Image 1 (tube, rainbow, N blue to C red):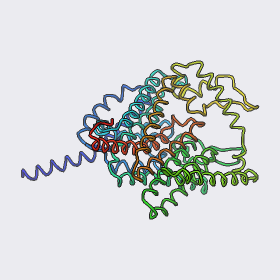
Image 2 (image 1 turned 120 degrees about the vertical axis):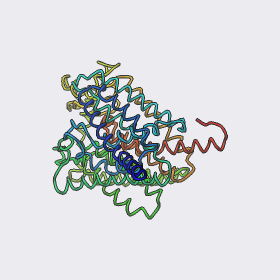
Image 3 (image 1 turned 90 degrees about the vertical axis):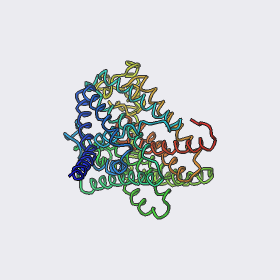
Image 4 (image 1 turned 30 degrees about the horizontal axis):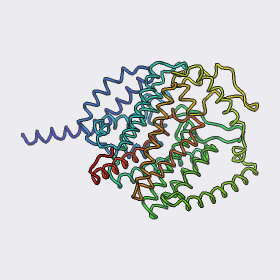
Length: 484
């Protein structure tokens, strides 16, 4: 009887351990959503502390399979796993999975004792940015919203993703699996976009968006599983960089699968009809093929040939009557953005220290007199990440954002210099290209306050943090002195 009782107790403990992750994650995401929607952080703090205490005794390491599930299925489940539906959802797939994994493995992911100097610097700057944005969110917004939802999705979750991925990326095999999972997520998103185009439906309304119609080009800008096409393209660019990296690390046997994934990702990028998106995709592909460490002549030759072909192709497109040529030749939105930048600078001048609050730019802009550039009226959205952050969070938000950018640059630059293994070189290059594509595409579209693009990008950066930590640890053992 004693043996049976002990076995029953053991089975019961195992069952509790299996249920702890999904139950705690859903409850935590619900409370986080309630706190964000209600503008009160106090509701969630005691629960986070309680779950953290319990969670640290449940997981001594990040559940790797669960992390892979989020990387691969995040885009597909974005419009569906949310309650209630629309952009006022309290529970979302990202909040459940990322917050749940982060809290239940809190002790592991926050242990930076073996982190490199570059990793610690990036984590500190990103944490400082999150704190500054939180303070500004708690002060309220001229737009009437609390801003806590933006803080949670666009600043906290990317930080947790970075810590989770850095902690989990402890082997070359698992790094390849994560890169593949990111590629799978992008391929699924591309397939959804293709299906939307062919069948004629839209998932944007499921997550609170609207179908984006470009009346001048006569096309619908596909948004895939997301609420706006800007998020869609940014996520696809990052997933394409991860796919190329996975293929280069795995070798020729992976090329057929990678070709299918990249074709779907490129299809989605094309169907969103962003010129900067097309340019960023070209940058990622050409850069991944051309750039090699200590082979500058190869990079220059391929870049020149690619530029010539792109110029020829653009010339042919511009002379046609297609919707693509309408997008390439349209200059009105460029003048509209220039006018918007003038208006944005005036908003900054009005509140340079604290800004107008998260999500408050549009509410302030529509009450101002419009600006004009070459006969085109300004739009009431910032269309520039730096202007948006400065206008909504003030000088402190801009400074911590630039500190985060500089810490990321230092991490990737030093990792590229110290990477002796070919796999590390491919990883670093792919992350650099993903960051460059994010800046090229996102800088004129103010992507910083959208969550999914930042989370996808920081997943790649988190892998680079893990490799930076490993290289620093090996160098320390070899030299017998601390390099941190």
